[in-house]
Amino acid sequence: MTDNSTYHYISSFFLIGIPGLQEFHCWIGIPVFLLYILTLLGNSVIIVTIRLEPSLHQPMYFFLCMLAMNDIALTSSIAPKMLGIFWLEAHRFDFNNCLTQMIFIHAFCIIESALLVTMAFDRYVAICIPLRYKTILTKPLVIIMGLGSVTRATLMVLPGPFLIKRLPYFTKDVINHAYCEHMAVVKLANANTHINRVYGISIALLVTVLDLVLIATSYVKILQAVFRLSSQNARSKALGTCAAHVSTILVFYTPALFSFLTHRIGKRVPPSVHVIFASLYLLIPPTVNPVVYGVKTKQIRDRVMGLFFPNKKISEN
Image (cartoon, rainbow, N blue to C red; front, side, top):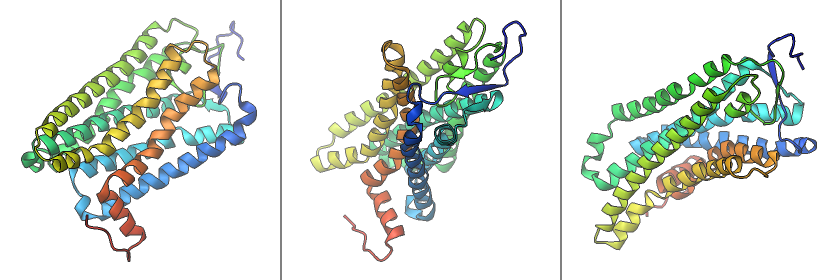
């Protein structure tokens, strides 16, 4: 540890991993590795299936393809370093590399949330104004919405590293976490971090509240349109097209809610629980999303079966 009197700035951080469970790191690395592999395989299958099947070249599946690519990127920004800590004792992380990981993690999370909003809008147009679906959700608009998601995330996360860079770090370099999380890094600074804390909570609340309001608004409109349908079969079919998206929303926001509550309310919760929840929030959704869409979306399920079992007849019902 650097002597406070010398004011030598630290050049790297020491990531603990999961505090209190260091002796089990080698075992904890196994499910992390499996989740990472499943994420790569599942999302790659989704991307390849959509790419190869012309009937899936529709806005709904383009958004799904974006989500799959984002899930691969999100998991790849965290899992390799976690495995390095758990299996190779690679706890040291260069200061700039730590900030880079922080940028990617938070940016991909914001993009994920934005893509869920675009998918909700897709379902709203498809169910509420189906006759205008193809004229509204054109390929240029889909591309603009995708680029808009990336641009918003970039603009939101870029101030973070610059605000951290202005802080002096010369006494503490140990992060009680398995990856470089914004507040975990900010807490180590030898200065007033009020601006950083306000920035962090503001971005989190802005993204979560804004996106959930937009998603909720879309589904209120969808439910109103569905309940106006006279046929029970038509209602079931309309709601069925939303099942995978609703499941994805729950998978993404539920771990985030638990992670937030353990930090803000659970003062007596052990640090290991905080880190585990925060890690599951980043690892579970990318793994589950392709499974959800594979199971609940017939078009995806049939095309995946067609890729792996080309001689098997696909049901038309």
